[in-house]
Length: 359
Image (tube, rainbow, N blue to C red):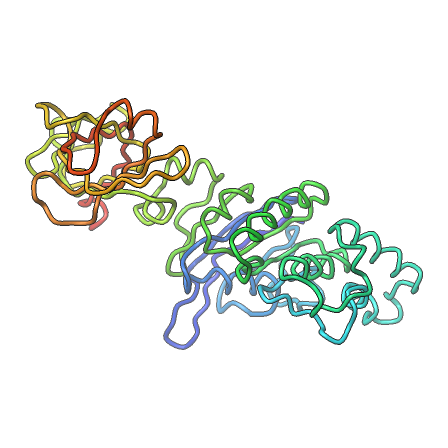
């Protein structure tokens, strides 16, 4: 089932939760709604489900306007962050619940219910826990049972609200890998909310970046990371270093220092803010003349094969420390250590003109 969001707006009192949001989600896609807390992503998910209604705009399911349809008529399955399992029911009965409460006309036979529940428990690899109760399961197991229960009613759309947010990091990583594999098997149109950028980039076919109720960018994980459309996206996705300066003569001037720009990075002259990922720097020992930004190494932390360097500006300018990531072999070859001076030369820069942003 395809989903088309058209000019949705929603207010809660004086708070603008969504502001003219439009998105297209193709049938069978797995899409992440990503953004900081309070940006409107859960409100959007609940409006798609029919648990909230927009003040303006439309929700089209397979081209039909479902904006005023009751949640029961939308054929959606919903998975909450905190599982919402019935504690007094067994795992089997939890998964069967949505089928057993259907009207008599639509309710499958008990034999059909049993067959479907057993198939789903095998799908989520927990059929051996059918007789257990939720209190006897781990957090990861409870979330997989909640997903099986949502799938039992054969939804056309699966909606997940921070599905792994209550779990520890190791279990969360295992479950998002499992969710991606499961989606590749069942191909149900799925939308999940997360504030975890790594989760969104690893699991989703496409990512919708939301900020203050507005869509900032929609694209594949690779495209939103490599070519952010706005400063918010560049700053939100992954670690990044930020420099303010001016573009003159095809070069970026940061204070008294000049950074050369590739032809693809060049913009018309004027004020600019530059974003550089920690892994996109070359280091030159000492402060030789030429293009680059002088800095001093304040701290070196080696984690596995990677060295993370924290540097301060060599020109005395205050600001956030500069973060640089190198592989340990490169660090050893350069022969630099804490306290040394180096010249930073960005290999890749994402520029945004501050004049244009202020306009």
